[in-house]
Each structure stands twice: as structure tokens, then as C-alpha cells.
Image (cartoon, rainbow, N blue to C red):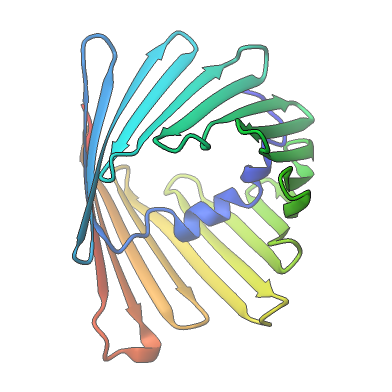
Length: 276
């Protein structure tokens, strides 16, 4: 594992995971089995209101090559082939979805002590090319993320970011949506022993002049039970409890309430994951 700045997607990731990861208001069930040959099969179902979505995925790892195949409710077949450490610090990812013949894509990720580069190109006659790069180290890094549509000759995405890490604190600043959205995030580890942390994210849209502030925290009651909570400036408050009742089973319960409209019913999400 390279001890460097990581990839562009890592900028602000710790705060995003604290504030948004695993918060879901749907009902989800996942079961994973593994064969003696190393083939891992995962089946999952999600109920979104009156709609039920399901998918089945398989994962097979052979040395440094991992093959993932996923079939969803709409009979789409997503295949991803990952070659890890084809060269020191290099990862190659090839993906495509059937029957969408224009979905093929090749992605290269390279991580160094002082740089992280991610580039992808669509396998079409006029592909979309995405390039992101980060320069720095594990303390401070700056980067950008750009997408260019060769069919129209336009830049369809250009973002920039800054990440600063100091001991148990991570601060990030990003400019997204082609310069329209400014995000500032903060993540602080209060106690590593109890996995206690606090975080915040402030987002400002220049086009709509809208501001969104989200603050949250997490705390482990014990090694197998994690509590999380968050609230934003619109009064939407959420809480999550995640419990591993065995090394092979995880249970998550999420609740959300709009404090500005307390008369409305609270949203409740449930997720169960079983592993071999």
C-alpha cells in the first residue's frame, strides 16, 4: 500500500463516509456465499417503496486478477475485470455492461508516494475521457478532476480539491460542478479506542445561492456496535445503529425525521448482510 496522497476521490472521503455512508431509508437484504474454489456469490434485494430491486453478483480472484459479474432486475449484465499491481502502484480496470454496447471503459489507477493519477476512456468511436490527478503527500495534497467529451469537444466536468491532514484531523475543500458548487468538510477523530469521531460538511451553490450544512458524529458502544447520527440546517435528523451479531452477520437500522415537519412520519431503513 502506497503511503501517499491517494486518488482524487479520496479528498474529503473520511467526512463523506461519516456523514452519508450506510444511511439508507430502504429495506435491504444481502447474503454472500463462497465456494471451495474461491468463487464468491452475493445476492441482494432492495425494497424502495412499492418497487423491489434485486441483483446477483459473482466475484472470482485469481492471483492479482479479480473478475466481477453482476446481473440486475432489468437483465443488465455488468462485468468488471481488475488487474492489481500489473506494475508497482498500477491498477487496471476494464468494465462493460450488456446489452449497452457503448458502456465499455478502460481505467488506469497509479499511486505513488507523491502522486495519484486516475484516467479512464470509453471504448467508443467518440469516447468520454476522464483524467484526475493529485499531487502531495499523506499530509497535504491538491488535485483536479476533468472529463472531456470528444464527440462535442466540450469539457463536461472540471473539479478541483485540496486536502490537509494533521494528526487526527482532516480538512478538505473542493470546487465541483464546473465551478458552481463549493464544498468544505472537516473530520476529527476524538477517541481512536471507541472509534469516536465528529465531522461536518458545508456546501454552497453559486447558481442557486443555496447553503447546506451537515454535521454528524459516530461512536462505538463496543467492538461490534456502532452508533452514528447527523443533522443538517434544514432540520433533517438521522440516526443509525450497526451491529455485528456474529462475524458473518451485520444488522443496520436507520431512522430519519424532519424536525421542521414533525407531523410527518419518520423514515426507517433496515439492512441485513450475511457473509460466509
